[in-house]
Length: 629
Image 1 (cartoon, rainbow, N blue to C red):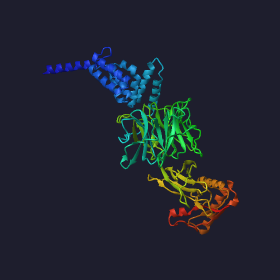
Image 2: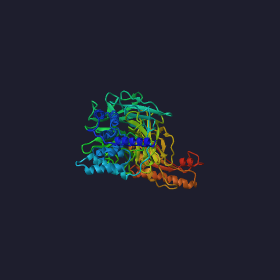
Image 3: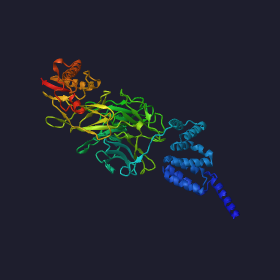
Image 4: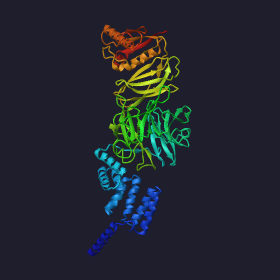
């Protein structure tokens, strides 16, 4: 019995020695060579999965076949299956450590692809130290790995595939959402050839089956890299090789009407040129367009253009050096908060070919430093095309991860807090004439009260409808203007706002007529004081503009208080407050004979003085037209 066991053990050891024997292509048996040759042919035809199967057969025929392990590692790299690639290269290393030298760069990628950046850095340094020729790709990988090693902390990242209602065997990419996150439009390369747009709507059960948007938006040409405006009424996108195009790729737009989407129109000069313009993104108010343009002095940069009063677009401007580099900057996405820009770049330090970065708008309007989103959101591959819902938490991107339906799929994940934009709500409604109740086209400005800078400049559509973004955490002045009417003002305080439903508000505008009056909601005073607060300037300047545009009107400014304090003191306070407003107007050049003021103290309440809300409503400044000459 012992002799039998000993014999079995010896046979097992002999078997191990046979399996561990190194086999090269020259020494491999015919059957293994045949499988290997077929695999090489498959690689030439870009059939990496088929090649791997053939290489596995070659290894079965010759277990120590080093060339097969090396080639299989390269195939797995092509498929971005870095764990399997690392396993293949590790086996090659065990069989013949010198056999790694020709595939050392790929071996380093397999290590980095599994998150082992220190080992990847060691491998690429070893390669560069022994390489006799300059290898810019290897040097770039070394820089990526050095950056990754210094960024020790991984960020939270748990992507979720959007599922079969959105994704298919074809590639899906460039997701884009409306501000209410109820409409998703994305690009699909149908049958791997023609790019078309698909649209899905979300209800309580989730995203519904996506539908091809069809004509006139989708054509026989390639449409891609689109962005749906936050109100869902304007689609901007890239069209390449269109007959009327100015360059290889131009930016086009289509508008949503009661009769459907309009035929695409070239956005024209000065945005489109002979260069490559692509990947447009609209600000929430549709007044600023961000896009990528290939340039002769830099690979590609991000530009912005503003919509002018006449509806045309201004000459595009490059974003500053905190965004653009000597490398490539692409896929800009401006969040609904108007203050957070996401984009891709290979010019800023990063983990891979393209990394995703974000930048915050500064108080002076410039863009702050670019911040890398971190690993594993960014990988050793090219990562781009990130969008974030108005809630600031849910991000969407395209990837070809292991659970894809076939190629690129659209995923979502919860963005970690430090990289989130401001949660953004919105106010929507329509503007109408108080006398005729007809819907009106008008201009709407949303102003940050503390900073005094604009958040959005919205124009209503032909039916008077509007949607204006309101990032939470701040106080806002809200102004509605139309020639021939008194302006309308309101304010929204979102400093302590908790997540909830957006605001809905229909705006009445009064025609310029005697006795027409409005409450100036954005005129502010300290308690029991009559010095104007700085936050009042925006509203006061609107009043100045109204007086300048309508030189025939004369007005009265009246002040009102609540019932706290002595009647006589309240009368004096209200008079001084009205007087302070008139003084501001005269200081701005409005003739004194067009202005009167009066204080009414607590004598004309418009709400109860029994609650703080009522008392706040009673403390007001009113503007009234007394004559139109």
